[in-house]
Image (cartoon, rainbow, N blue to C red):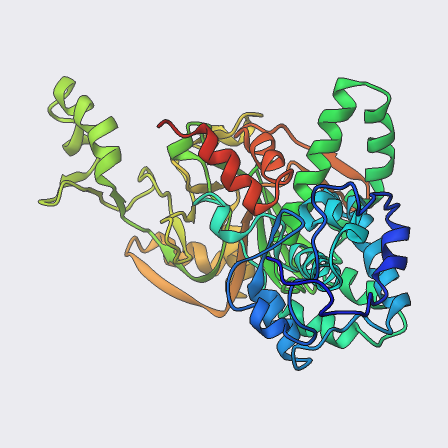
Length: 451
């Protein structure tokens, strides 16, 4: 986007910011040099449609929201120290496990080759995109997989930057959008050592660095702050923890989805609303077709022997009982994945190291103790109701938030890092998405699509 030269005389303060970023391009020889974009003060017109500065596409939505707060006037003129501090913050994105080039760092390195308006918009776009990555995650929700459904509360990053403009430390205001969890702190602290080892050429150190970076991203998908009372399933750790006032009060082993993609346990948040005692098991049609019908071909009495009835819609319902598939307790936690926590009659599974054998639901080793804590009742009282044999739904006094996560690196009780195998193979894929800006990711994906 260009406009006749001479319409804009102020160069603002981005030259100092450019110097911090070690700019050295010569505007007379750099092919990406742009003359002034439009007449001074006409930022509103620039932000009406698509915007390309220095060959890079800028996201006009956040820019429009930000400049609307300032009457579409340039904001960096007269704010040299703030501009410098924010450029430095973007260039330090690696401290958060992020690639600065995701946030137009390459454009900031050559701002002297741009028009004054180009420099103005480049810095704003860089800071806004970095703020959004810290607040919501660098991989936008639209580019996540279906099972990556964790999401923090929305943050108006344009409002945050607007408020930070005249603060003594605007970079701190932006970086405060990152999580403050013990996991995030421990992962950040481990970054410098991992990066130094990776630079020395050890393949294992590079793998470790990437593991840290992707788990920092997963932390950015969580709400701020986390609910003090919550249930937490780490699928990669194959373990459930219940927190009260941010302190773990109960932990138990779980069985999770097998590695086959369709059976993997997803990442999501919901609420446990009730305990269902003596639950029937309704087997979905896809499992019926894949697993039950072949057994029926070999054993016509299979349904009768297992207290099952074939429904008209192709599902199968198994009557409740100690040998039923859901065991004696199911935890009602509505979600679009139809993934639930429940008991199991096969208690021997919890002694295995590899407990990745379900169709995605999560089987709990000590469900009665867990239910007692959730329902604020003695375990013996719950056992008495179970012994009656009837199916009952008992609402929790207060619904409890539950998070199903996939953390292959996380902090232990002492603040040290624990690592778990990436048995779903999600880390490498997520790391690749963290290397590319959204526009470059689309171009990369387009190149891989068949004609």
